[in-house]
Every structure is written in structure tokens, then in C-alpha cells.
Length: 215
Image (cartoon, rainbow, N blue to C red):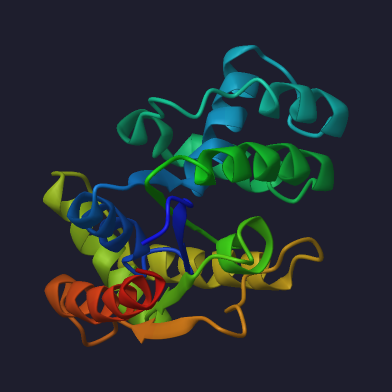
């Protein structure tokens, strides 16, 4: 492998398993990991904390450029109200440009990086040597989210979660700027009937093949 940073781009819809898979891959190869969705959530949280409007693109862009990518706290940023706020600013082109620039800087970290999100292989790192598109049926993804919430001891409504998953898919895939879609050269991993271990093994075989060619 050359001394150039090795980038693994992982995209897919909500609750497809890409976050768990991305962290496992980063651990396996000793690479840096970034959940790019958290960068939008961190921007939204900063706006909420400061009492700033969520519909002012110039203000949101300024905050986005100040977000520190190190130490993003998944537990804090995963709160529902932060996610709702993030979905409002994520459609703003100026905010996306600011965060994409930050994500690209992160992707250059040696010896390698794993970035997961919605537009990594298509927009953020289109030249990444490995691109994975991780997906699953809406029903399976809603069930996983439902089980996850119950597992934390909280109450959950499956039908509401299912509708939310479908709504997020429509929003992510239908937006004009950086819509969610597989890169033309992405490897598709449908995890609907696949364990995280099976998905990891499939991803590892793809990554190892590329690494061996680059060695």
C-alpha cells in the first residue's frame, strides 16, 4: 500500500446498519472514522443551544464552519429533536458545502479513513478506492430502530417509526442537492437478511481485494 490515505466511503439510508459496519471496519484496519450525519446534527445542536433560527442559511453556514469534528458525541447528538433540526439545515446548499469541505479534510487523515453518510461516494469522496452502499428494506430498518429503542428501555410505536423511515428516505433521495443514491462504482450490500457479521465479512473481502491491488 502506498503512503497515500486510503478512503472507504459508505453510504445508505437510515438504519441500514452502515454506522455499525463503518465503526467495525475502522477498528479492523486502524482507520479514522467519521459519521458525517453527526456533523449536521452538531451544527443543528449549536444553533439550538444558541437560540438561533433554523431557517437562516447564512447563520447556519457560519455555525457549520465552526463545528469541531473531533469528539462528536453520538449519544447526545442522537436525540430526536436534534435530528429534526438537522434535517432542516441539511437541505441548505451553503451548509452542505461547508460541512463537505470539513469532511474532505478529515478524509485525508493517514493512514486511512472510513466515512459514512448519504453522499460520501457521490460527492464528498468520489475518488475513494472503496465505495459501499449499505441498504435494507424500509420494514427491516424500522424494525431495527424499534428494537433499538425498546432495548434502551424506552417506549416505541412501530408504525410511527416505519412512517418516519419512509419520510426520511423520500427527503434524502428527493433533495436537489446531493441526493442519496449509490455511486455508479459502489458495491451494494443489502443487509435485510444479513447479520452484521456477514455484512462485515462481505465488506472486508471487498476492501482486502482493493488493498492488495494497491500494495
